[in-house]
Image (cartoon, rainbow, N blue to C red; front, side):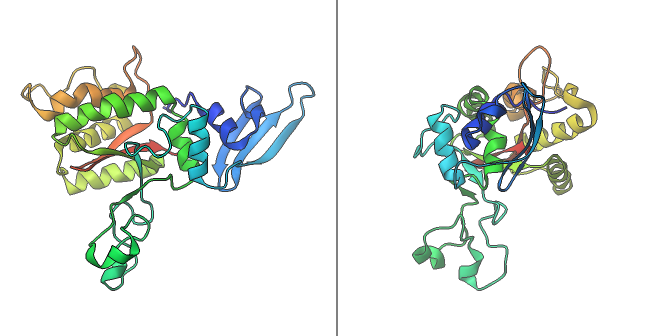
Length: 270
């Protein structure tokens, strides 16, 4: 089932300057590198236009500022507490993917300043700005209320239950197939350092098979003691995956990594 993206039209208008996208006459195709592939219909003449609406901003950093100004992004520019973004250059490892001498092992995208590279074994695996405008659209289109609830309520809840209260949010945009492959790798590798992540991965597999019903309202492992970290985190894990309405609906947000310093949340690409 496709996740809801209540802010998609507003976000696209803010990032393209094309207000015709905000209406039933617009049929968005896909986000491309140069802009947005769309089909639009003139409601007066019935004529259709198919083409690419270009981005109004030169970089993802400028686009974030535009969304913040339009109140479509929950964090102020320069806020050190704002979530980070998965470093696609090193795939979150902090290490350069190309082999080389010791200095070359550090990812130059998320690493420390050049004069400190020799002393640093790796980068941090995440960066301040979105890797692309498409990635920004995927996250921002979930809507400011959901983003605020995730980062202000659900993530702190999960982090406390897992014993890593200082972990910060890192957004990662992945395809649906990429998410399934990630879960397969997690299962083969076994439990991560934090068992909450492992349980979330298992429920993600069940959701792939059975839909949102894989996330029951009550924790489905009665043998877990009341103080177990998964039982304590369960309401937040469930809400993160399918919301808390009467009818579960995938949010499009997935817990794909949990460590002492970061909680990685994947959002399905558009």
